[in-house]
Each structure stands twice: as C-alpha cells, then as structure tokens.
Length: 206
Length: 206
Image 1: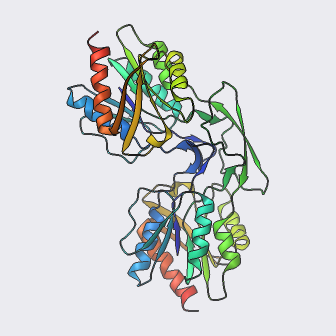
Image 2 (image 1 turned 30 degrees about the vertical axis):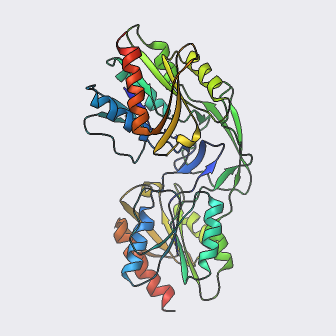
C-alpha cells in the first residue's frame, strides 16, 4: 500500500489548508513496485499526476479520510509506504458558510490531525512493515530519526521541501537505529527504484 | 486582462491556505475573448488547466504577486475580468522553518490580503472597465451587489461554491444598480460566451 499526495483541511466551504505535494513520488513508487510484480493499493489525496495503470486507486480528500481508507486497506497488505503529505493541522471549528471578510484579523485555532503512518505503525502485525517519509527544513536527520521511532517505522526516508512538486529528489534512508543506509539522489523514478530495492532486501526477505 | 485560478498564502515553507479554483472559468473566458479577436493577458495562480494558445500568460503564486502583476498589466488593457479566486486571508506571521507539531493547538492569526479586483476597480481610468466574480454560499445576490459597489465593478458575476473545479456553472450577471441582467447556466464555455457577449454589448460599445 502506498499513500500519496496532499490532503486538505477546510476552514469553510471554500478555503482550506494544504501543501503542494504532487503525488509524483507516490506514482514513481507505484511504478517501481508494479515492475517488481507487487499488487499496489494507492490511497491518494487530490493530485493531477497520473498514477500507473494497474494500481488500485482510492481517492480521498481529508487526512481523516486517508487514515480510514489506509487503515482498512492495510489489513490485506504486506506493508505500507507513506509517501503522502497529509495536512497535519485542521481548524478546530469548520464554518458551514463561507466566512465573510470583516476588515478584522481572523483568529484560527488549528489542532493536529491524526497521524496516518504513526497509526499504521502502531497497529501493524509482526509480518507487516511500514516505511515513512519525513520532510523537514531543519535538523533533518535528527527529526527523521525521532519520527521513525515515534511512528514505529521500519525504514524512514528523510527529504527536504525542495522535493515538493519536483521531478527530482535527494533523500537519506534511515534504519531503526538511526543509521543512514543509503543516500539516494536523482529522478523520483530512480529514488523509487532504490527504495524498493532496499525494501525488498531488508523487509521482504527477512 | 483576465485573472484566473487560486493563489496561495504560506504559513511556513510547506503549508499554505488556498482554495480549489481550477482556472477553468478563466480558460473559458480567454477562449471566448480570443474568438472575438481580443488580445488576452492572463494572470494566473497555480493551476493544472491548459490555457488556450495565444494568451499572454503571467504565472503568480500569492495574492500580492497577482495584485502586482495585474496592476501592471491593466495599464495597457481595455478592461479586466476577475475570474481568479485569490486567497483573501494570509498569516500575519510566516515561519521560515517548517512548524513542528507539538501536540498543542496552533493559534494562527490571519489578516486580509489586498483585494485585487477592488484595487483595479478603484484605479481604473474612465475608458476602462472591470468585471468581478462573487462566490458566496449565502445571501448571494445581496452580497454580490455589495461587492459590486465596494469594488467599483461595471458588472458582477454571482455564483456559488458548486462552480469550483466544475466543468459547469450557473451564474447571475448583475449591473451596477444591482439588477439581474441575465441568468446563465451551462458549461463554463457557454457561460464565458454569454459573459463576453454582455461585455461587448454593455462595456465595449458604449
């Protein structure tokens, strides 16, 4: 199973919080996994990228929808790769009417959304694995290692904001002890092939 | 000149506030205007729609960028159609680092962005005209009329949130006295042709 793309958290019927995740890394991972003979279930937020033919695509809008769809699909999967960038804050109050401008500042209280990959990591069976992505602007390796542990991931891909909506990526792959297994740089297709190679080597043959 | 698509207002290097405007209404208006022999300058936020060949396309990201590009381009244009849905709130403080989740709520203070069409409406010359779009969920006609007056528009197109990212639209066209000139319903191409017809009839021949 692969999660991909952004999610949206609406303030009102028109405005929402999101990020520029394009789904390209997810599409590349799906292509690499299909090429290795895997069945792929893709849980994706709204993107304009085309996913490869042959994936089972489940479209979602919000982080809660992604969590629910991923939780259900994960039961029948060997493992999960969390390439999505779910919106991780949502407004505490959502207006059913479009908020009208008043000329005054708008105080918005945001609360954290449930964490999709952490939820999968906590609930995984002994025979299942979870690979996370960490996108950080500062202290990347440290924060990625903290996330790896907190989310009970088996591997963590650390990358930066320059990955967003780009055709290329530059990542570090971390194992549960926080060691860097591999630096990978190149097109997202290349990065995806190397990640699938590592997953095969470390998680599927064990 | 046509403004089109959404804009983004970033909280930090990753997260932003936006809306689902697709640019389809702008693309349809550009096609209708080109078919009538006009030159078209298109000021567009990030969209995945393809604009017709022949438009002069200026890409922007934020509302401030749209305002600046539109203000400059408008000098050389007969009139402006505001089909964009600029993000109308922005965080007072923008973080240069990705905000880390703390487990606590995040208090976000949003302030209004400058209004692109109102700025054009206030600065237009005697020989220029401005057509606005109002998207409302409630009290549509009343709020559209208020916006028409406040933004110094010559015509106002009133529509609802079902127009967003749809291939069809249903609008009311209001004149400066608040009267409904025409109800238009159908594909965005059809709506665009009728709007251009009204602009020709009421604003270009006077």
